Structures are given as structure tokens and as C-alpha cells.
Image (cartoon, rainbow, N blue to C red; front, side):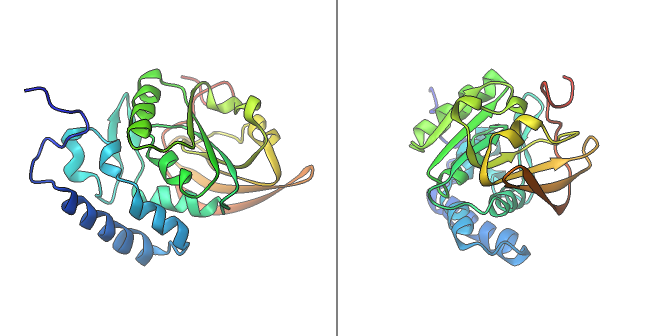
Length: 228
């Protein structure tokens, strides 16, 4: 028997099971731990996280932690996804750039908060799988690009918000250059696996920096990031 790759390997994991798991994630992992933006909470309650992890991990899709998705990459903890989405301060008309597509889950969440999402992935295998998942689930305002995310996406700039899902050793200048006036860049910056989340807001030629706390991400690799 050939199994649909989007079908759970465990027949006991019904749609009702995932609906309940999603609701509990929002209440106990997000709302009770400080996520207060109702639009973000609604987006997190809507996106089927299980469709963005390998089928043998569907049972763990709503666990309070990161999960492996192959090629030494992970899907971030739900709290981190929600925290970054909230920090971006998105408006419905915003155009967003995400650096580090990974599974595509974060882009799906952002797509419910903004007008258009461009997401960049450097690994072809992940980009292809994320694009397939996003298309199957009909997130039509998400565009997946295979490229070095540290140089941004100049052809689509400027962006109202930029989200970087890997740890940078320093803030890539191209990302600052591609921010629109009033645009927000949310990015973890610092040593390997020990960064401080920063939100940088553009005010003309000036950039306002805010420290949002300590995080640990995989390294941001590329021309303006860590070497491979």
C-alpha cells in the first residue's frame, strides 16, 4: 500500500485529535506564557503544524519544543514562532520577508497576518518540501525562493517586516537596506547557539534597536552570516 505523504502513519491521530492539540498549544504554551496578540494566537490556532513535520513525528507536532525536519534543521518551538510573529508587529497590508523557510510552518503563520510573504531557503530539499506543503494547504500569498537569505531579496524589496529564523553573528547590512520606512527586522544575533533577539525599526537613515531576550538558534549561514 502506498501511503499519502500527508497522511498520518498513526490512524488514531484524527482531525479532532489535532484540533484539540492545537487549541491546547495556544492556551497553555502561548497565551499563558505571554503571547497576547489575538491575531497571532488566531493564526497559530489555524495552521496545521502536523503537516509541516515528518509523518513519523505527527504525534509530537504540538509538543513544547523544536523537532527535527532533516538536513540538521528543525521546526522551531511553537512559542518561538509566535514570539517572533508578535515581535514583527504585522499589519494586514504588510509585505514580509522570512529568512530560513525550513519546514514552511513559520511562513504559513505569517501569511495569515500579512498581505504577502516571501520566504528564502538555502537548502533545495527543504525549499521543495516546504513549497509542496504550502501549496497543498493553499497558502497562496507565500512565495518560496531558493537563495542565500543573508543577502535578502532585493528584487522584492522594500519589506515592511523581515524575520530571520537562524542566529546571525552580526546583522546583515542587506537586510537593513531592504527595510521600508518604519519596517521591522526581528533577528537573533550573537555567538553560536547563544543569541539575543533584536528588533530593529527603520526611521529614515536611522535604526532603533530593541533587545527582546535570550534565544538559541541554528547558525545563519551565507555571505553575510556564518561560514558553512
